[in-house]
Image (tube, rainbow, N blue to C red; front, top):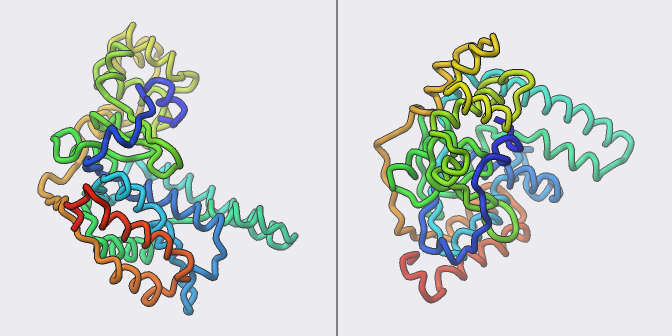
Length: 326
């Protein structure tokens, strides 16, 4: 379901960080990382995050700039990485690839005409999570003792599961699929300035008068990352149709429509593949100096780009009330 579609239905409110201090957050790693990666590429000279052999590791700058937000508010992030791609997402991946290729062509044209600002903006849109980015992200998080969980499939689904069973206090993602995957409480805007937003499942269902199954049906009618939806059905219409006809199949039958793999798509949200066997140690002890060497010496990132971030992390280790970090 498109972000604008689900946002118009979800129960979301801004909260103060003081309300969630001391919490554990399962972070959708790919979602979080991609936002910092694209921002870094857009606003930073590529030579400061490119090694001598031409390998780009802008993600390392993004991580060092983004993690202090958790530590400064006494939050323990647990980074959850995607596993195998769900077969239903093939079309979405192909669409993203086409958009990246189109942006790359426009970037080259912008460079040729000397438009550096436009070129940088388009360069950010071509970013993808390469094998090196995956490797170095885990390497840096390990040195900072940040817990990592490997999901068997969708990271958002794993975050939602960990939240639903009570192993973490919140799921953390800018996407809205955590709601469909059953996360009771999702924190949004963790990559933005200012306060976070809290998205709550039970409040959403109560306000809409729907069950979770019906909410998933609404999403499938509108379209998700895994399906295109039914033409002409937006969120308000979908809710009305589900209220009238009861479920997805009732709506499809009344409209004379069909949906490929409808049962499997519904099951994907209601019972997604998740890992039940994971361990989370929230008593983390970051080795900031090892992390600093890893970033600036092993991967040749300009120290000036990351020093302030490392200093902010170090500051949290000596603040009163954060004894569990040491």
